[in-house]
Image 1 (tube, rainbow, N blue to C red):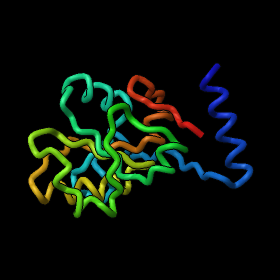
Image 2: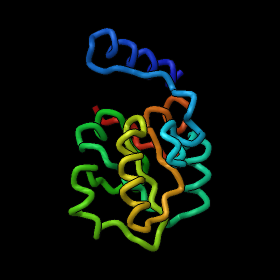
Image 3: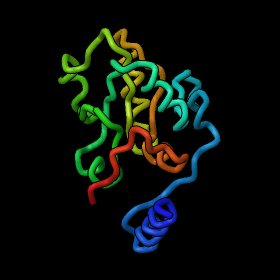
Image 4: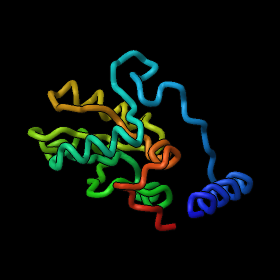
Length: 144
């Protein structure tokens, strides 16, 4: 029932032109289309990863407004992708880092940046895909 209401609300927002929704690309759950080997994780993979590694650092690289509008993963730390280089010291190098963005594009940019600097990145999360695939175990719902 709740999912139906969420989908109806998204449909209304799309009709009003306030948001756009893209279909889940075929590559979700596999290596990215650029061949970089960075995997966009499925909701079940995200849940399993967080379950199995309680110290994983969830790095949300979106603007705070987007986090409020679209939701986030529990225990996230927000460092917008444009600030990552100057705030890199806030990211623990001993833990795995899980970058999150709306559809995974900015998370992939952040992942590539982090991997080049020696961080362990098991994949990236597109929060829209996490929600669309029924992910809710670690979801902080939108506040708007």
